[in-house]
Length: 516
Image (cartoon, rainbow, N blue to C red; front, side, top):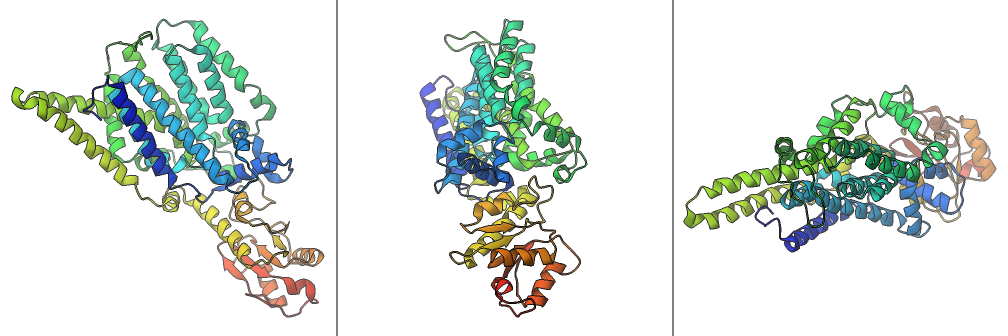
């Protein structure tokens, strides 16, 4: 990349297209992946909304800003393959993020830095993992980057609209607001006028402001999340203050991480030449070069100081870090070119392009080799073990019931005790609901006594019982009594037991039973 003239727009467009295709190919391996809690809840809530359902999953539609969920409604939520289509929608937003990061970086730092920035965002391990999730983060990043790009292009009205759409995608878009305000405050786009930032703020508020006071049920949760409130829903997310420092090491990859440090030094020393593309007013180069720092520093400070920390929150940091890595790569390329220029005139014209292209090929090959062929679930397990373990256990339980239940049979199901701090504690988790086939179920609390469960089985003539009582020393009482009083043998799995309960309603109390 570094050996290509920055003014060759056709070649740059071709390289950008290849980078976007590479990024989508790396993410395609994650399509059809194991859904974690939030993803499964998004799928179940959109399906419930589409049919006017009132089950506990339906409330998830308004749990966060609704733009992404509304887009999911266009993907035929009641037809097979809906989850895969929603994953592809998220991947398309991530491809848009790569393109917008290129446009934003090229406006400030030039084409070479922009190509490298786009490349690193496309191959960052963290981005590859989280970009396929059925969550709102990729859409929020897309509209936030669009707002920054439009601001630098002096299109304040559409920048305000884009910022409003970002806030209608997810609350974490607020992390990009300091970058937009900071660019205005430092005079990156002269002349600076108060009416510019007022117009952007008013349009963003008009676009997204209605939802937060009328529908939001998550703002209070985010406040508790930051404060580390003493509740099970927050306690499971509390990590040490340095959690994201360690996460960046794995989410960026070693090449991008090292180049970020080089890019930081290059950005603070950036002077540029103040030139602007045809038809555009020039930026203040040294102040516009603060963009990646304005995108990264406020967000990282809040995330570090917050007691609650989710692994996927790094998505709001990755574009700024990819930009810094791109700036660092371009700076090193200039330094390598300067060294090549010291060679004799007879070899300079050969040595310089060979050296630059060789270095580019090595860095690109190392970055791609690190992520090519990765197993999605293995990466998820190492990145967020608790999310993987809970989702894998719920999928396993659903698949076990699917494999044994005959057409027309029904089951008793209790919520799984291992989902701590569940927002729907008296209902099976959405991961289980997503993977469960069309099997009618009756739900009882996982703390229900043995007699209540037996009454439910007899009243509704339930053929199976999938039970997940709270942990206890030894075998839980409910499980022991089904085994001893009815002679049932359980299919045991992580966090749950599955019983064949047909004999419970067919025979009198104390009769022998069948098992598996």
